[in-house]
Length: 628
Image 1: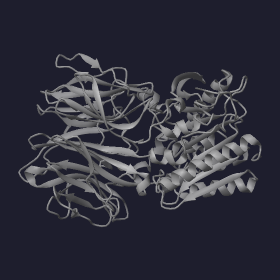
Image 2: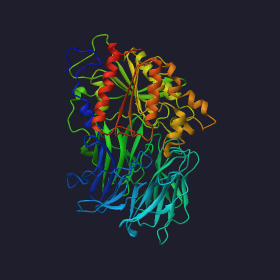
Image 3: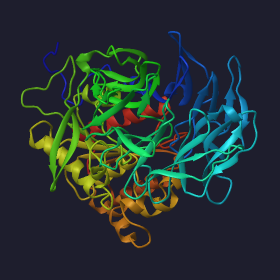
Image 4: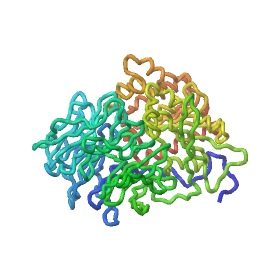
C-alpha cells in the first residue's frame, strides 16, 4: 500500500540494494540437453565471476564443475559455447588457461585434452564415431590471429585443421549419423548478422570434409544456427525476407518452416545459443520476438503455428528434451531463469532463477513499449515508470529519468524482470531502455539503418526518446541522465556532446576515440567500423567528427566513466583519454577503474561499487552539489 510521499523521487528507500543487483547479476548460458539431463552454465558474481556448469537430473540441481575451474572461452573475446556434453562426458574450455578439458562421469577432476598456450576453443561438437571433438579454434600464437574449425582427439593431442581460409567460422554441427558436417563462415567487414554463408560437406573415411556445398547465404543475407533434425534434414535461420525465419533444406529445396514478420533469432555476438529446437516427434519449437516481446511457438506436424500462453517475454536460448522445451528466459515478473516447458499442456517449471530472494511486486515496474518520432523515422523504447510500495510522487512532481542505451549496437531492450532496472525505478527514477535504429527485433532494414550512421541516428533516437517522455509530462526534463555500456557508453557520451537534453552521463567502458579504437580492438570487431562509419583511411574525418573525445568542447555536464582494466574490446586508454580531455576543460569528470574486469563487470564487488557510484553521481547532480 503506497503511503504519502516522504522522500523526493530519486531518493526513495528501496529494498533492492546494490548487493541484490550483484547477486541477481548471475547469468545463464550454454544450454545443453544430454539424454534426460539438462545442463547450463552460470556466471556467478559472488564467486568472482566464475562460470559454473550446472546439471538438472531427476528433479535435483547440482554443480558439476568445482572451483577453481570455470567454463568460459574468449574466442571472439565475447565467448559463449564454452562446453558440450555427450553421454555424461563434459567437454569444456577452462577460463583460467583457455585450454580444452574433459570431465568424465564420476571423475573428480577434469583431464586435459588440449591446453596449448595461445589456443582458444568454443562451440564444440563431439564426433563419437571418430573419438574426437570438433570446435571453433582461435590461434593467437602468431603475429595475426587465425580462426578455423579443427578436431582434437578426446584422448588428448594437438588439433587437426578441418576448415580454414576465411576470417571467421562458427556452428560446426554433425549430422545424426556423423557423416556430414555443417558450418557457418564469413569474412570481414561482415559480422554474423550481415552477410554469412552456410556450408555442408560429407566427411571422408579420415573424417576430413570433402567438397563443400553452399546451402544458403551470401551477399545481403545473414544465415545462422544450422541444426540437423531427426530426419537428417539441415535446418537454418535466414533473414532473406528482412526477418530472421527458420528454413529446412529437404531434397534440394529450401522449405520455410517458421517465417513471419518477427525475429526467430538474436544477433550472434556469442557462440552456442540456439533459438529453436526439435521435439522427439519432429515438431519445431522456436522463440519468436517482435517489438521487444518474445513468445514460444510450436510448429505442428501439419505446419500450423501455435503460440504458448506463458508469462515470459524474453527467450535467450532453447533446447528440446523429448516432448519438452528448456528455455533461458525471463518475463515482467520473472528474472532470468532456466525453465522447463510442457509445450502440449502449456505448463512450466522454473529450474533455476537468477534472483533467489523474492522481491515484493509493489517495487516492480513493468516496461511499457513506446514508439516515437525521430527525424523522419520511428524508433522504439521500453519505458518503466517509478514504482515503490511505500512512496509516491507528490502532486505535480515528476521523476528524474535514467535513459539507457544498450550495447552491441545490435542488441535490444527487454522487458524481462531485471534488478538493474528496478534498482532505479524503486528509488523514484523513471527508466527508459532505448531500441535505437540498429537494434535487433525490427528486421534487417532497421538493424542496418545504423550502417554509415553510427553516432548519428542512434544519438538522435536516444535524445528524442527522452524528449518524448518529457513532452508527455512523464519525467522531469531538468534531471534526465543517460547511461550505457560499450557501444551504449559511446551513445551516452555522444548524447551530451553539443546537446542540452541530459544533465549527466555515465559511460561503462564506452568507445571515446574511434580512430585508435578501430586499430586497437580485437579481430572480431576490427572491421565493424567499416560498416558503421566507413573504411579507413578514406573516412578518417568521419571517425574524428563522431568521436566524443574530439567533441569534448561541446560537453557541459558532469561525466562518470567506469572501466575494466583488463578490457581487450574497449581498452582502458579510451576512458583515460576522455577523462584527461574533460579535466583539461574543467568539466566535472569521475573515473573509476576496476582491476580484474574486462568488457562487462562480472565480479560482485565491481557491480556493487559501480551502482553505488552511479546513484551517488545522479543524486549529487539533482541536489546541485555537482554541476558545471
